[in-house]
Image (cartoon, rainbow, N blue to C red; front, side, top):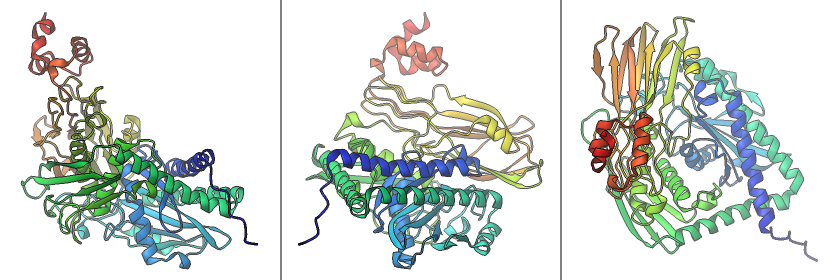
Length: 568
């Protein structure tokens, strides 16, 4: 008599199991945040965690985290398994990589850690995390400089390596890494936080294994992936079939003044979705190039956001989706192209292009262009209080694009970031910096029946005798566009107010130095508007004026039909 097969999982049990897996991933990410050393992780939460099947298929990802990190996790795990096959892994082995080529993290500061979870000596799952470390060496503090043209200039490249062997840290390897970075204590502390994240995953998955039994455990994994696939197929099938094309441009690549084109053609048919980036510019000299794994992450994010926001974030959901880009293009660059700011600028613009295309299919499900860049800021130098190297890294929020039925949010991280703005108190306590100004930028939102969100401004005064800065911004020329007659928003603006009071305009992509007492001013773009501005209610215009988000002069220009009411 053959052995009885386990009973198929009923819908209630399936839902319980998928949330149990997601809960473990969320706890892993929480452990990473709580034990991290750098403000970029413990305050801004620039990190992510995931669990995968032994076959490397992503099963669950923490919603608290960075969507871009989560989208590239399949490539990270695949790159580790190519170098270290699962059958060679042992309990307590942990692997590290930050190498984007051929697939992996989006840029060198994103360091990923992968480990297998065992029951006795049987691998039952994989745990992975990615965290943005404050420095990986290279040309400038923060390892995302402009003024470079190849990845060798951007910092330390770590191919998949074993950093823990049967639970023991390879101190010599860590010493080699720390010798090549400016902030060794922060890098070590954040790596140990990633290790703690992995240990939480190990513990909780083994508890789940013991509670459910091997058969039900494995069956639930497969059922979750199949369920997500069915939901995604159904969601795609509900969209109107067709081919939808769109394009947008980056202002420049930080080396030449030429605009950089990103083009996408989205094909929806028979419950499947294909995105082809044919027509996108060739790879560029500056550090805005990306790999296809990052483009896939952008597509996965948009598909989830537009088609089914509650969709399980796992490999099954992406089975009906394919993505292609020409070899040697901006989104499938050849080694050793510089890649450091693709996460910051390029990938955000890919999202805008995809939403612009899907506007033609489901306009009520997308928003107008958001700020369209993460607005990177790195400041590094010697802290006069300690004599040690410091590096402050942050991406700044901007305006969210309006939707058909609501205004965009002000001064918020959008799309692929999902991080927080660092509190003023944390900046001033941790770094030799003074926050002179921090707020929203009036008149930066795109006008419309629904207005976009306002950008934000932060002014920092340096206290170090010599501070090296890197800015990675965009949208000064090609400002965030509106939809359905909505107007474009204001773009990025960066300048230095010198200690003698003079002001010096900066490019949006720059590597330069400041002296003690100089002030750096960063203004981020707003979000595009939705609908004819003439449709906006007078009371809402007056409320924006009262809140200081809109000046009477700009109100007259953008909402001219209300001129007499606004000035009475």
